[in-house]
Image (cartoon, rainbow, N blue to C red):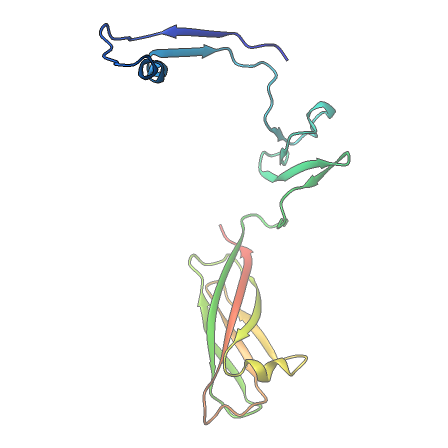
Length: 192
């Protein structure tokens, strides 16, 4: 790499600097200097683009793009191979893939064995183009301990483009005392 050329100029120095000590004048020297340098030819801080970087640039990260210019991921060279540096990568052939996360509390108030449709659990704004894929994780509530005793807890999700419902069949009688279930949910789908 070539050594850069620097030009240092003194600019706008007042005629009467009123410093009592030379140290104060030296401290203010930066206010009266202008430094110019040439750009460093060949200086690369990051690899960018769809093509694999050359061997002499493997010590710096690569922001890889797809051939159309859309982002693909961040890569680092590890043991001679380019590997993703980011822990979560969502890849899809679906254009405009979006993810929405949320929490909610579901209330049950029916006799044991009754199939209930509860909801809407959440509304989506803006709407998804098609019903998204929904995952649900129970996190607490009065019925939580009862549900964890089952290998399967008899529910299905009824997703719509603008909201989703939970269809649930509980083996516990909830007709006299309402029971609650706290959930975390994630919706993944296409959205323009």
